Every structure is written in structure tokens, then in C-alpha cells.
Image 1 (cartoon, rainbow, N blue to C red):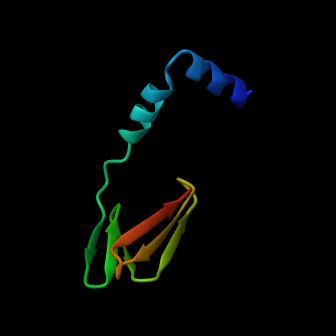
Image 2: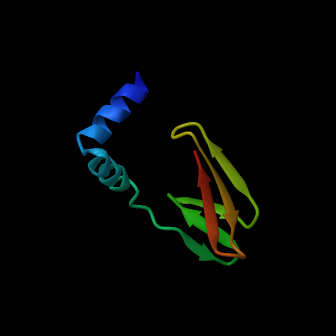
Image 3: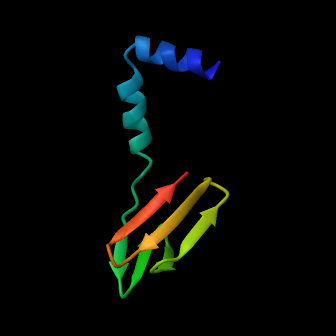
Length: 72
């Protein structure tokens, strides 16, 4: 059923609009200070990870390389 809905949206040319709407929800900035990653009012030490249930995400901090990986 999802596949049919996705194909219908693509056929109607709405895929770019959907992606644009999804991107509007990500208004958080990541900052790196003193070996930590700060994101969504959470602070993780370098090498630490955080698993969330809602939204279903896992964050991994690499403050050395100034990256925060969010999988979900």
C-alpha cells in the first residue's frame, strides 16, 4: 500500500514538495565544544551515543572530527 501511495505522489509531481516539507522540521543546529556534541538540548561526550525511542533515532558523537551522526 505504501508503494502505491509513493508512486502516486511521484506521478503527480509531489515528491519534491514532500521532501521540502520534511526538511522544514529539522531546525536544530549542532555545536561542538570542549570534546562534546550539543544537539536538541542534549550534550554527548566524544565517542558517546544516545538511543531515542521517539523519534526512533541513534546519535553518535565524534567531536574530534566535528560530526554527529543521526540514524533513524
